Image 1 (cartoon, rainbow, N blue to C red):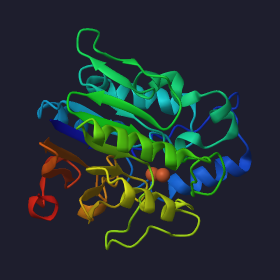
Image 2 (image 1 turned 45 degrees about the horizontal axis):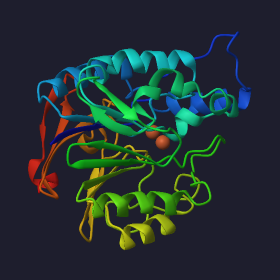
Image 3 (image 1 turned 120 degrees about the horizontal axis):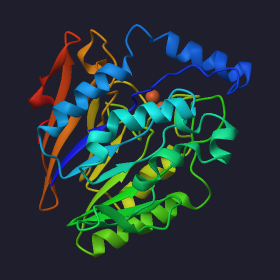
Image 4 (image 1 turned 30 degrees about the vertical axis):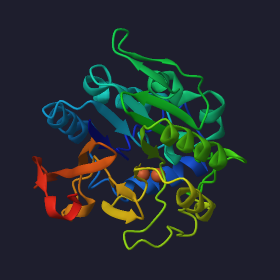
Length: 300
Ligand SMILES: [Fe+2]
Ligand SMILES: [Fe+2]
């Protein structure tokens, strides 16, 4: 099974007066995006990444959140349109990032779900229907496609810090899903927006930016290890292996940074017989087009 993984594209559309949000939220979002505005270019770069990825004929497309900057309708709409060629032709799974749960209003209105619910609610892939069927919504949830189960989680909360925390019992529920999938002989891919680990293998515990219950997540991985963990949030790509689990940070799929590990990239991952057989990274070079990057860094 060939999986394409993208993350953290941060479409940014400043709200109109009608869609005004609190000045504080807007100020922070502006600061957040403006500080990077030189680099982030979602509308152009995502379209290039999507076109590049389709050439690999993926069996599964995964997006690990931060589609937006401020969770506005306009941002989700722009992201939905840009990803449409993948979403409409490849079985896809999308989870939220903290910027997709940016305000209480966005959470209350299920704003992200308005545009992406077809790829958020779990279920089994039905090739005839071209859709996931039997999903019950809510997190954590499971997607099943062939011999692969994708466990999707959401620890993102509406507050103005960038930290996250799972709801009570959610880590244990996800662990049960992992265990059940493993017992059923499925290969397990675990999706979370936040990094569980830094690139050096230590817990990702940066104050104000981390999962505050990251130690509980790691303990759960030790008891019931997924085969593969995919995440974003920290806009820098890396691979960390922890015991039998491969952990991949895709970084961002929309920045034009001159630093290659911070430039727009995405992963093409081959899964076979309970192994992550190959990891390739495609990265934008010289801000122009996507090329193969560091195969030996991510390899097998
Ligand atoms: Fe992000
Ligand atoms: Fe994030």
